[in-house]
Length: 311
Image (cartoon, rainbow, N blue to C red; front, side, top):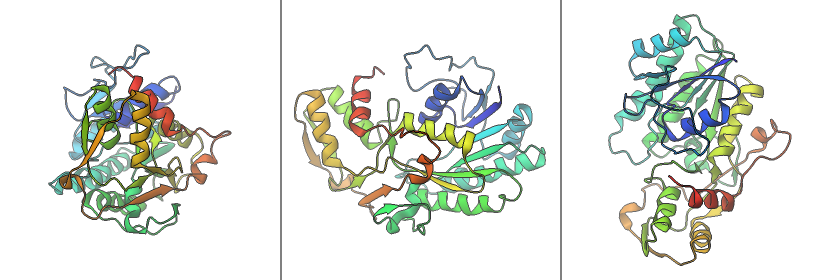
């Protein structure tokens, strides 16, 4: 099998990518420390081989050029999916966004050039958050970005930096919209909501209830990554989205039905973000053109999956 290197394999998306792609690729990964390296955040039900003893997982700080260069040189991958990033939008210190998301990615690309390794495809994970204030209607890949926070600015900066390597490396950029599934940390909205119902909480504190989002299932997102490895066109940008409009109140209604009781929702002003983007819906026609049939998983199925999943 071809070698696939996944940076940030210890994270939520990396866990699921490993499970979904492990029968198609010889998977290697980087993780940020010994505790997390190879330790699955999801207690997967199919006896996952994702464990700390796996010699194909390397502890690597991508902000250290020598570390990422050594991993690249040892693995010599045929494909790369670059997930390693700071992704929590509300992080108070801005510096890690740029050190990891921009300079860390540049370290990876420079390491490939120095070691003269040119994988058949390198997928760089950006974010739909870069669309920001220009996210009106159904957002396609041609909308001019207008980011509103350090996370999205760092992802857009990463994209601009990567353009300098397009003539040297086989790069594909993906912009995932919101997605969720078992194993995602509880400081993200949907896992927080599901956890409250699992624990039979009577009330929950949330931020703005009027936001509208495009939520995908992590399994669909990972299938998209797989299709991009096979058929994605180098030098292109792809949205990953469900293209479905979901109001936060709908999430609560679905969970009330699944759990068999109505939770009391309290709005906490501290949870309301400054520069909140109230509506963010993606146009997914470009990514779906790589599939023979529509692989999108409806939000009802995702929430049912999360609510019934034992973690």
